[in-house]
Length: 319
Image (cartoon, rainbow, N blue to C red; front, top):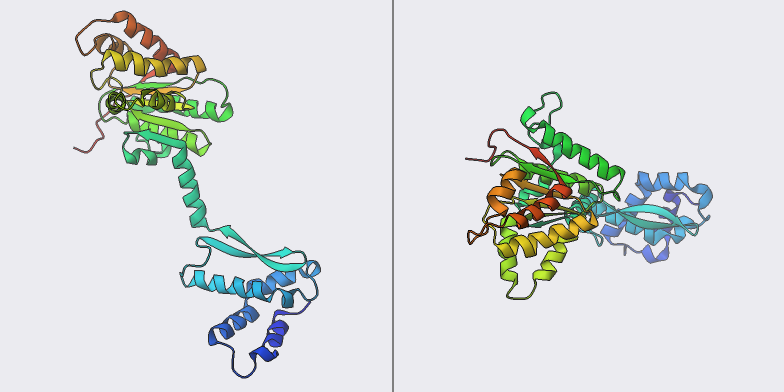
């Protein structure tokens, strides 16, 4: 097998390059092929696998390899943006394979994670929430007002990682405004996404408004189906606004009934405890009618799907 320097010398002596017809740019490439340490190392490492005339017959591929590397080094766009050339062996000759750059891999990972978390009327920054950044997550200085909720969240994540097929109840996290209830559920969603588990996060008061608008275009059933069938569902801020009987029974009730029957993990955040949600919110509709049996029926589903935990502490929202 020829050395790189011998191959280049042969190229330069070939008649098609005589008479000063070689473009200066190509001459530079040829010189770089001759001196490229990666090409030299590849040839040395694979001597026994390459044909004796592999360098000569792979001239175009070597040219492409060095040319693309130069474009990337100069931060110019190559014909395969974001992908790096690698020398490989193909039928005893030298060929090129392209692999994603670290930047492309990270972008693909982020996009994959984003596809695993669907949000409906949720703050955009909730997708950046992380357990490690949850205020009070420091194991050396745990916040007792938040430790139980965090501990239960970690237990749920561990259980889902270990066994995705078994039903694991979600959490019903309640407490004052701004203590981090929504942030914690977002952090849980991201941890699940890292493990290939899809989550849907819904700001329920906004979703209720959207559902009322969906009546006009007959898309109620379609929108409910998307929410109710999510592998993991997080219903944020339940109880924040007064709820009509229709939203309670035909929207929330249908979603929770399906999830209970299918045993799908469901999370809730609220300013109300479960008892308060039932007595002060669900049983009184927008017209002022008292419907305790319907409220109790709904709460049975919420209690089946989740485990109640209180989160207190200071208001962390910007003033």
